[in-house]
Amino acid sequence: MWKRCLLGIFVLIIAFCAFGNPAHRTENVFLITIDGLRWQEVYTGMEAALATREFAVWDTNRLRAQFWRETAEQRREALMPFFWQTIAKRGQLYGNGNKGSIAVVTNGKKFTYPGFNEIFTGSPDPRIDKNEKRYNPNVSVLEWLYQKPGFKGKVVGFANWDVHPYVLNTQRSGIPVWSGVETNFPGSSDPRFALVQEIHDDTLAFWGDMSFDSFFFHAAREYVRVKHPRIVWLALSEPDEWAHEGNYAHYLNSIHNADRYIGKLWDALQSMDEYKDKTTFVIACDHGRGSGANWRNHGADVEGAERVWQAYLGPDTAPLGERTNIPEVTHSQIAATMAALLGEDYHGAVPKSGLPIADVIPASARK
Image 1 (cartoon, rainbow, N blue to C red):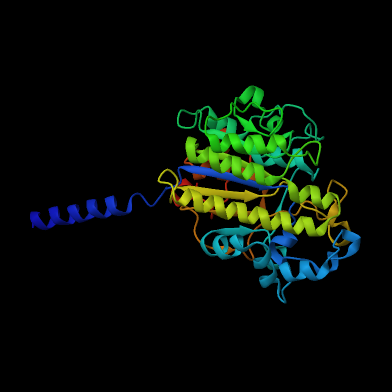
Image 2 (cartoon, one colour; image 1 turned 90 degrees about the vertical axis):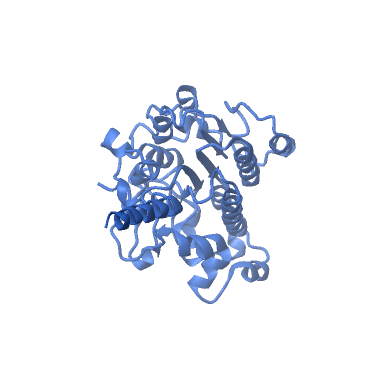
């Protein structure tokens, strides 16, 4: 009898060693934000009514060949293949208002700095009412994690907007953020990263406060390859700029590029022992936009600009795919969700923050 008991215990030990602890596997979180990307393009793809000369589409046939398909499902996959071929099958997507899944910002401002403050702190702040270089008085979830032993020196940002370092209050938090200019980023001795920096500096500045997203993707990938941080914020910003300029063709192509960067980054991490099967991607925008001819705009007075979307992909997130007919989620829940994925209780420490999204996190982290 005792031999059978010993055999049973032995089998359980072998099973545990083989499969590990299924309750919590995420050790790293990558937050990837895509500024101003509407939920409409994420879920229905190219909008034919906007593919006109009024919105800088000079070659309609070419744009339609790239992104127009007969059904919304086909169009969205043509625009964002990684989202729909990988995340929709292995992760979770929120915010398709056409299917009973609503995601919103709660700050009422519906523009960038308030949106990022809500994402990072878990609650809106009426003091954050301008897109200006003003250090955030609030402590972000990244700064909160950065103070913990397991994350000190392991948090970094690659953010395409010169105000982004102020959102994380790099002066106080000490979190390095590479924004291309006015950055506290210490640099890297890696020659590949140095080349990205050099090409960035040698490229004509098309906008005054930001650059092209490709630099930030490549900088993040090269830094991660050498330094292995645990928490990374990659902020892509081109879609918002092209939308404000009313250039729908560039807007769509920048979305397509963002999806491609995310897919390439995911593949790179899955090839590295430090990240493979223990990394979760949290992907979101900072605000929505208007609809119809008002697609270029957002802000407190723009109807519908509070509508956003979220996506999650990682070892602890059940593969529920595109969520339908579920309760509303908010961007104020992202901070606590990120922390819970790492086994930390941000909402408990900051009760005014939103609750973590239960379906995204492992069962062991649910209250």
